Length: 250
Length: 250
Image 1 (cartoon, each protein chain N blue to C red):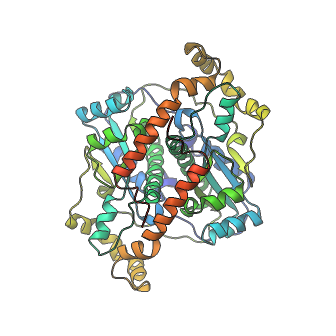
Image 2: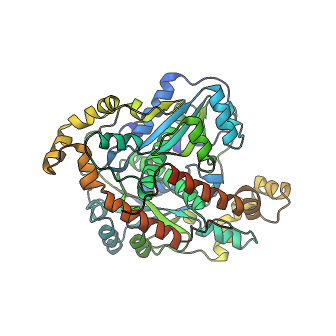
Image 3: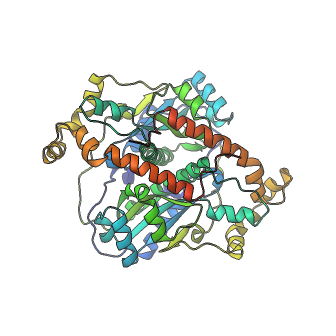
């Protein structure tokens, strides 16, 4: 396996060493080599290094410290703005103001993000994805001045690691891979699939610290709560519409 | 830059040589090393090798020949089914039946897909992404027997290449990268950004073959038409709801 893929760790502590410009250019160039739908490249990357901008992003990303610590923050956006302009200037009637187009552009942005993440690690840098991007899309749109046709979909912070965490646990391969048809798991099988994860010291600590009965409850009651998910679902759908991607009728 | 990233080409012609099992396992393992939201791993991969299944998928994917030719088809799915079962068995009240959860799971699936694609290329294999996955999600759900909580989001066909195409053109880096804030392009700038693409022999041929006045019109009138996008937007939103991801109220 590619060492870079095998050795991926999420880095949450960064040195304040800046990233050499040629390394950042390689990371961004790597992003552009990913597959995109019909080679339309309907995504953009916003690079944030400015301290004030980083502080604003930090506040939006639930004040996760790596946004301040890491020298570079990359916000990957679904983006039909540029493509639509190209079409408009060429008497081409663009029909990309709908949900499918948003989702297509999201795919472009996410494949590009993963290329960038891997190339950063290949350059000796560390990365962390921020899931808070979709929760706080509206604030991020304001900070980065994203116009119509552009929606932020994920964020990758990049910098020199100031920690060396071990590889993170994963479910056994047969938990996520199905052959020919999907096989739903029985309760016994679920127990087996999650037993290693549940028996980790870190998991037990999570459960104890949060006064819960199971690791699953830490997810449902603390980390990814229904009320938050419902709230951010409505918010994100509103933002997708506001940015011009919900005209789903002719 | 990682050679594997730099040398990526989409492969549309495949030898009928099967993929060695250890190589496929490396590809699947690589997928699982990608970052996932909260390490929940809310995605699945369905491996299709069976001839009848491949024929069914081929019909769904607009009869693109690589689905038949390539020995392995990998369908990447947003998947909360397994996680929800884990929660249910542990008295944890899962709140992952909403749009945000679907989108979160889509991110997991897409980052895993890109790891798989790169590892396949690292193993000497070729790949092609199929954008038709979201258009034809309902048919694919039937073929692969995907239960509630599972939505196919992209497909990667994998096999030994039977062609060696050149690198595909990309817009200049400054077309897709913005620093600190998004800068909208003027018509002059758009002309510059797209001039190389528009002057390619293959682009001119596209325009001529389709009796269009511009490359942009090939996209808007032939390849990615408004009527199709609107139709598939409604379809995909219906499927996301049908699979249990649109309860956006408490």
